[in-house]
Length: 108
Image (cartoon, rainbow, N blue to C red; front, side):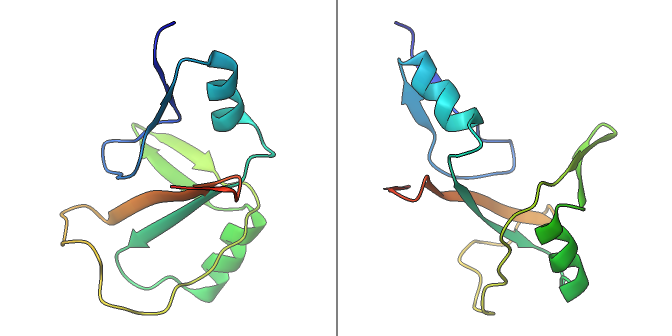
């Protein structure tokens, strides 16, 4: 069986990419709504509290480039305490997108 990725890493993101030879498992983990996914996102500048509320409600458009916009789904949003960045400075506004866990039981 060919090896296939579970999910993906975009050009400007970092993280662990899981590989599997089980197509059903790959599809389930990457597409199933009941599998919880957690991300840490670092952005330039301050984010207003009302923007966080809109993001939690699922009403924020995220530009994917080339004129494509993704509307977010309702989610839990948490602002992390201000600490020194763990990543070196980058030239793009979004500095990091890291999936931390998958379904609460698998920590990546």
